[in-house]
Image (cartoon, rainbow, N blue to C red; front, side):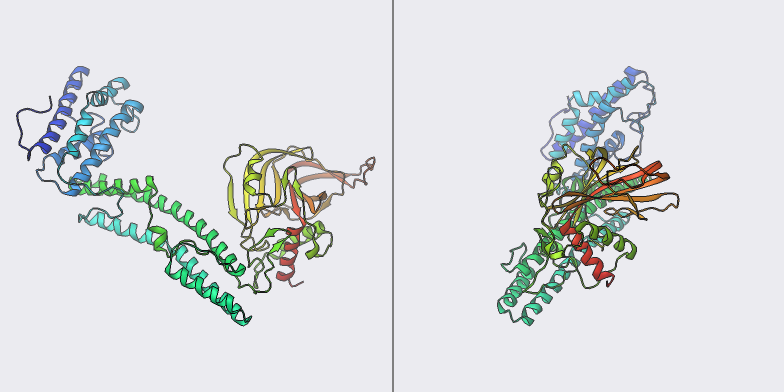
Length: 549
């Protein structure tokens, strides 16, 4: 029995908790006597002596300390619930996983060490402790509430201030994005004004007012404004996801800091202060688990109303950012370019070989890029076509020799056979609408390289144009072939190899002559990049502008 005699309504809740804790002490005493270790002080067994506030013993000590108080504050009840939850969790952990003293058993008998927490669970004592805490008359604040307990502990206050300062900085990228969008809307309004387009001018003003006063997004009917809004929304969503990831890491880091502070305060005999720190740790842990920060993005201003990197205002009459269906950002070819000159020259060289001198505006519209992967198919479907792939990494291409703010690179592992040779990495490139515009396969440390019946040429140093990898050794050589791969698409085969010699092979039957096929000691990397003409033509435009050709 947990209760003796008749208690008044005023005394019942706290006495109920005290009786429940005393029952745990009695169970501990009986267990220690039955296992022959009864000479230890009551409730000071090996797993109860730990100072870790998350351990079975420390959480019980916290409950006992609170049970000595007659009147509880809201913080007391919140702390008691946290201790009761941890006491129950520790008991189950020790029964299931033997998480005792960092995995070490003092008695050398794991089953003995499981017996006491098993008794706590099976006897219903844990449930009684929870019920006793819940019956206390003071309402506890929600652990998921953003406001911490209002208790003054200097060390806790400093940690809270540090957390709030770091959390506030998470909004900086979103605030900067909104400010940038306002600036480009203003530039777009001026462009309409200079073009004498009063409707566009008024529509831009309307969007600027809406963006200032109203959360959410309503796309404009004007293409130039809508494109800016689409870019803003895309970048807003990306930054918001990044913010939530960063905030979750921040919550977990400060949860650990508060737990460590609770441990230090417990060791110093400041149990009340330790409970305040532990309550903060629990609150942050709950927020991290729920991912709850409904106010975070709102603090940064409006929800997606347009998210944009540096975007040049569009001329109302011309918006040249769509090529054979491939859609790029409005500022895909900005006024100022800072490129790697050597790499850009290499990229232009291969791109010119792909379009074979055809006028850029008349570049052929591709049909199939490779296999079942069609030009402009949704990139998500393209990824699924490779089967059950995992760990797909997607990132915006920031290489300034590529169209700005327009392309996304999706990479993953897969076993692919292309032209009789196996590759282990796949890279897909999508445009701003998520449409597939290019495909690359990479073989890392290949055992053999298959050369096709086409001329083999040498060109150092870049051996992976998509991921910008360069040959850094004078003992290695970059060789390549360029192969027709279908309407409007050519395959650039690049191989980083350690050469031995070259040998002349006779012409293949029905094929053009095979020139000087390499004989190598070792192949270091092989890639097949399927580059469609519309994208190749954009590389040439960028290079011409950047290098002032």
